[in-house]
Amino acid sequence: MKMIVLLLLSLAACAQFQYSANGTVKAIEYGKDGYTAYFRNSDSIMCIATISRIHLGESYKQAKPGDAIKVYGDTLKIYSKDTLSIRVKKIIVNQS
Image (cartoon, rainbow, N blue to C red; front, side):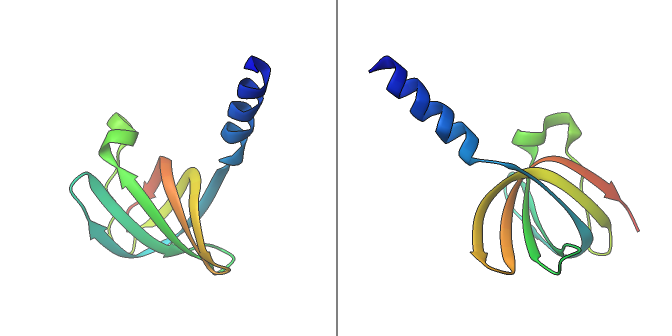
C-alpha cells in the first residue's frame, strides 16, 4: 500500500511540467499579490502569465506593456489550442 501511494505521488509530481515562453507584453492586469501579463509566444499562442510576489520573492520583476518578457513555470490550464496559462517561477524582463 505504501508503495502505491508513493507511486501515485510521483506520477502526480510528473504531471506538472516546466514550460518557457517569451514575447512582447500586450497587456497587464494587476492583482493583490502581483499581476497577470498577456503576450503571444513565437508560435502565436496567447500566454496568460501569472506573476506573484509570493512565488518569486526577491526575483519578482515588474513588466509593462511593450516590454520583452521571458517566463519559466508550470502550465496550469490550456484554454484552447491557442491560449494557455502559466504559473511563473522565473521571469526575465527587458524593458522597452
